[in-house]
Image (tube, rainbow, N blue to C red):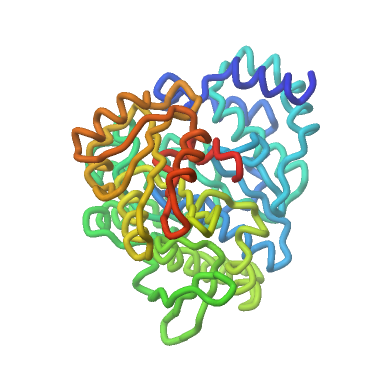
Length: 429
């Protein structure tokens, strides 16, 4: 098969949660364990960092990868979902898995895949482990897809585990309270493996503490050790932070523009400290250079990504209540005349809280990503109008963006988001 034929086969033969939702969800690790066994258990030969959380796990994973790259290591990175190309999910030192390796992997495993019938995500996890082991990476940063306890990535024994934060998302699978969701995320905590919690939250603190005690895992609530204060943008547009680390004061610049990176940074820095305790050689220069070059080193997209200046155009993949609240806070810090919001969402979540957070003084253009899981633009608009928002419907994402650009003056702001899949369809991304 060609690469395109291979992708068509995977998309059509394997259920994909990002596209169809609940029908692709697996609530056990049986398929992953069977597939890894068939592959010769490549995950057992990998040194890993395992990253879970509701928001921030993607940024944290890319940041850790960038720092380890600057330290001179050959670093694998597994993340999901992809925005533009399937190969984005599996990278080594910022370079996507070659298409020929995808074709080879599927050709070699096709008969077993048809027998096992895994989900798309289970297959990609196996592919990542296989590729990282084949290419002999020094260390791999593995991002959880959803939850933790039953996530397909949760067959690894990492050097250190990281849980960024806990918020309301995927409640039909993970539970409808923060402690229940935290219990699922805490499933990545392994016996005697240190775990870093990026944000210390009152509702979830005891959940993580109890799991760590049960597994004899050293636990580090990053905020107890590292204080982070946002100090603005420098002349090159990088976000600056003042760090206080147990008496050591210094400044850090990162090339991700979202204010919410402030909430990720303590966890990232504490994780690096743990890796250093475990004898990974990571100098101060590697930390500073790695954090200032996350985008260029790893190719991360869609995190408060600026697409234009006059008018100011920005997109962000934040899509749940906590993520949208932080986005709105950052929008409110900016100077602009009028606000245009190009928004689409998925159809398997309660969006009422998100709609209540969105600015009332904006003009909305409601759109719809081209996936079965996308919420119908008319249904979204109806719910938005009931929540007091105003706007119009243009289903196609890029036509909606074009309309916003035509309406906006140089002094206005255009935001594009509401769903990862809306951002993924932006032509100029």
